[in-house]
Length: 413
Image 1 (cartoon, helix red, strand yellow):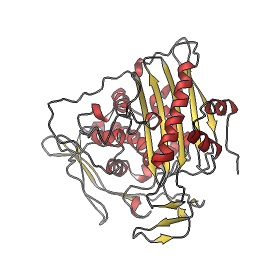
Image 2 (tube, helix red, strand yellow):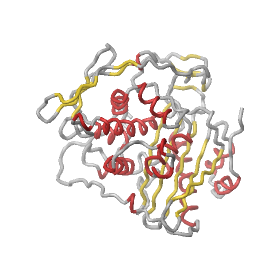
Image 3 (tube, one colour):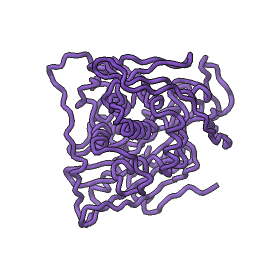
Image 4 (cartoon, helix red, strand yellow):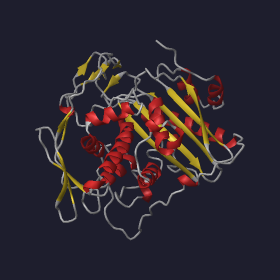
């Protein structure tokens, strides 16, 4: 087994924060399955970025459950696929309807979270990014397809990605099937049909992945053996960081690693990777439940807000005691930018599915301390050239105070 990678200079930066919980986790990286990647970005005179990764206990072979972070590559792939269907007369704002061809599949003909009630790829991506809703991920998965998802990502060089599961409690065999889909125009006329699909590709499940000492079954009976993640979604933290970098800075990665997206696609992704629920008009989320830092773990504290001038372009995930965030942080006030990715496991009793995870007492506080350690370090770090961050300066939406529609307070995420 390879030793986890730690850069001593990065470890020294982390140890400048002596907060007790933060240091407790840092001292026990194996217990918390902790992995961190800090990406320093320096610009040259022409504003070209140069990236340098620094690692703490990074081990690409150490499993973590990616949870909702897999929504990010599915969103990228969905927009890429739509670009290829442009000649068919469909785009991200075209209504699409989900029929069924298997008894376990769920149809979808209306999206009650949308102001117009129409399901669209654009609306699914907004819901998946803004507060990390689950059903939009399932629909993106059904649109792109299990086989196409994995083949395309492997072809692009993201070899350790395995996305084989929807968030529906299905068996590995059931997850191979995807729904028939119809795109319809404003008159309700069908403009494109995607037939149901079955993925015949094989997956390598030869390496067992087991975590914990016990778990609860669906009927709440205790099974005294580790939980089996062997056939679950998987990818490394480094791959997550590269996927985000490939969309935010496409010229910084090899051509094969770039998604085939339009300029409008990039702007759309940048907006909803960074926009706050309080700014969003559609869906209209309850801002008490879904506050600005709700899915910005590196800035999630009691204020529930980010510092003025800061935007975080990111995707988070949480499930089974695992917490993960992969982020690009831009501070337009101070001319600061960097990337930060981290994952840890907070499950003291080592029983999975009992919903007794230490998210609030250990996980989120640790990630906040990590985020602030790097943010404060970056504020002080000298730069030869101040970055021009105008590419990420976006026009965000604004809530209309006169909008009396009820807010969404409860979602599956």
